[in-house]
Length: 86
Image 1 (cartoon, helix red, strand yellow):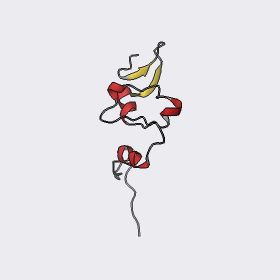
Image 2 (cartoon, one colour):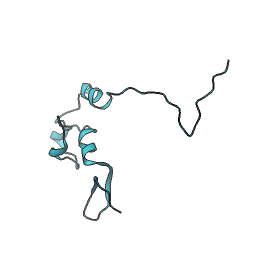
Image 3 (cartoon, one colour):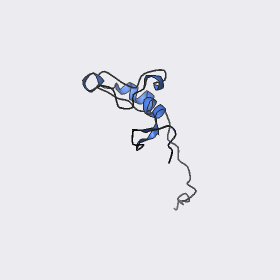
Image 4 (tube, helix red, strand yellow):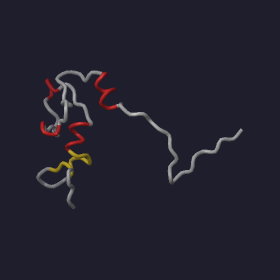
């Protein structure tokens, strides 16, 4: 079965459910000066700034790049919202 955009190796086994674009922009990889780049690193997929850090990943970058969203509450189609009682 084809897996467009998914990572595969020679035997066509899927390496990740995420695309290279996702892995290179939505994950942060630290300590690369000690352990090297992640297996999925591709310079052409890095976007405006790299997701690889030579040392520890700064907390400010984690907050800015991974937690730049606001959680919202919404009813699920499979589960009705809870009823408030007094």
